[in-house]
Image 1 (cartoon, rainbow, N blue to C red):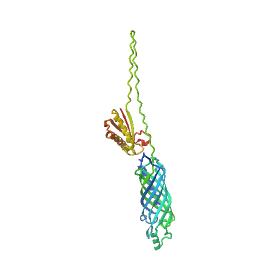
Image 2: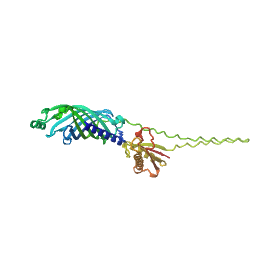
Image 3: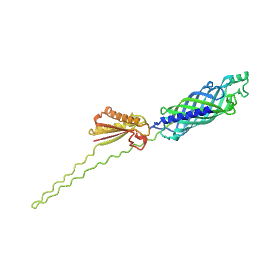
Image 4: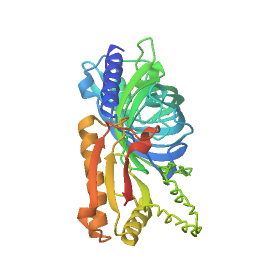
Length: 375
């Protein structure tokens, strides 16, 4: 039992380390990260704790699982694992028997409990717990030991069913929208006679596995409204007063014509906002139309010049990374305007604010390049 507590403590330390290293989050724009369905496979090693040399009882194990995350916090799965187990009798040797364990588990996403995120994240630690049924068979090795030299009157020779209780941790790392890899450590409890020996309490089996999950069934994300940019008001100068009419004693002169002021031509001006995915400086497909419209305006108004400013969100990353991202984003937009749309480079000025300035209240909207073209 002390070994199980030590392994669970190590798992919690690993979770805390990964939480600190996963400040960045995945921010999908075309789908909702919850709910979703998953299927997966795992492989690793397992051992059943006994009074024998534990290093000699480690055997491989494999698993398949299917389940769903219903909310950002709660999910469930059907998990089946097994292959063969080992036991040992001091002075006699080891013996093998086959088993399969079927569990229904509840999954709690600890990251979303303590650090809620509706946009998904790269790292997700899960507390796993459930109940099920284990089935063991082919106990011929122990039966042969017991026949040659009786060591236990509790050896089972027929197939054996036993309860299965489980508690463990799974650390899941998202590689992309559909695929993640995971590390899982579980403590499984079976009936005391599971390994053909009695010690007065249930037999504990420890499994450590790595695997891959395939995710699908996402919903399409709701469209995000574009920020409203209010143009500055244009001040129109007042019309000049007409010159006073001077009356003459002899002859009244005709009044001078009132010259109407020339109409004020409002200066040409347009603005745009190019949004980016987390940690990316490449212009998204959905934003290319905005950039093309901005370039078309500058071509139609050759007297205009552009001011481009790059930003990064302060909610993720760090100031050094965010400053570099903002510079790369604004440089990429200028390069596309020059090379793809033929805008003269001396008509475009650029600057970068990193995460020191946040033009929008929504954190994710600050991954942006803002552009203004005006006379």
